[in-house]
Length: 84
Image (cartoon, rainbow, N blue to C red; front, side, top):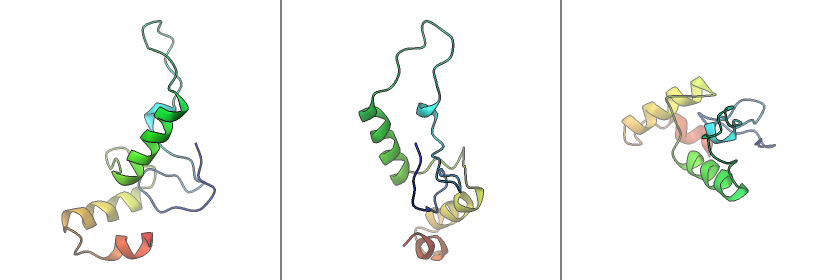
């Protein structure tokens, strides 16, 4: 999954690729389950956009800024200004 428009987000690489585990192919294990549906993938991406995973960032700088913004309860304006 790739965004064509540049995005400043902790889980999106500079080239627009989304860093989310559901996009990785299942392991070679017959018990690993089935491939995710388009609906599941889209819901996961939407959820990730709303709630970034700062434990596995694709964009470390965006992740650091997001955590500062979140921990300051929105008082640190740097992240908010960039994402607008």
